[in-house]
Amino acid sequence: MSSDEYTLKLDGVWKKYSTTDFFHKSIREEIVGLFNRKKDDTLSKDEFWALRDINLEFKQGDVVGLYGTNGAGKTTILKIISSITYPTIGSITVNGTVAPLIEVGAGFHPDLTGRENIYVNGTIIGMQIKEIKEKMDNIIAFSELAAFIDMPVKKYSSGMYLRLGFAIAVNSSAGILLFDEIMSVSDGAFQQKCIDKIKELKRENRTIVMVSHNLSLLRETADKIYLIKDSTAVPMSAG
Picture 1 (cartoon, one colour):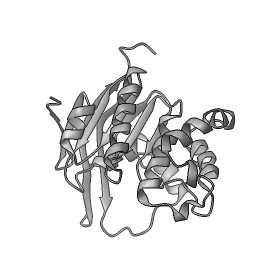
Picture 2: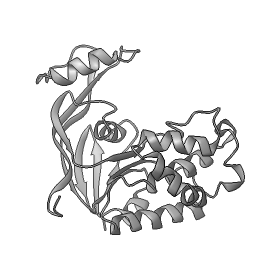
Picture 3: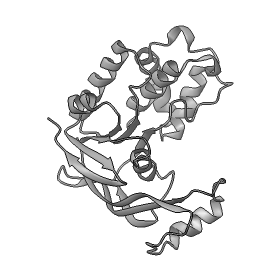
Picture 4: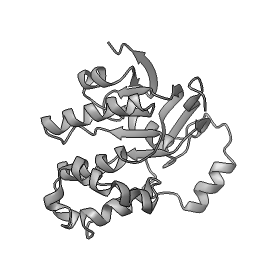
């Protein structure tokens, strides 16, 4: 893929949810819906638009910030990019492997140790076992959890979960990384370490999409920022 081609493209993406659906659709319903999606821009009584007409294109090396209030649709965009959910209307194109860090501790088994969860979480985001073994020492070193790595992660704090999840994601070979509020539970020193790593990944031509309520943080790391407001995306100054 040339440097002029996009790695991510959201084309006219709309997403609606129901306020009364308390249970997830079955896998069969999701698959049928994926291949039989029709343009349906109507809302029933209990539905609302989480996203409305989102049009975004990101290239290799782009660090993109998504900023906005809770419930604006920021995390929904990440979930659509990572195929956790699908658009109601519109399409998304992903050129590359995605490593999502959308929820602290997501993909970790509480009864497994940190080391064992590196294998579990690493394979979930597309790493091969050989790659995980080769990068194990780097992952543990970046996380700064060597003293706790053979402890079950159910004994970890939120900050320790974040350290381990971030360390796994940034040591993967994925070309697209998604981070949702990764700095919110980290201390100042580790936060700066994450910022420095994001800048390094940008130099490696990775595409990074970050969600944060911290606008100053986004302006330090991102070269594009979008305000997600009223379920739409509006460009902001990154300076």
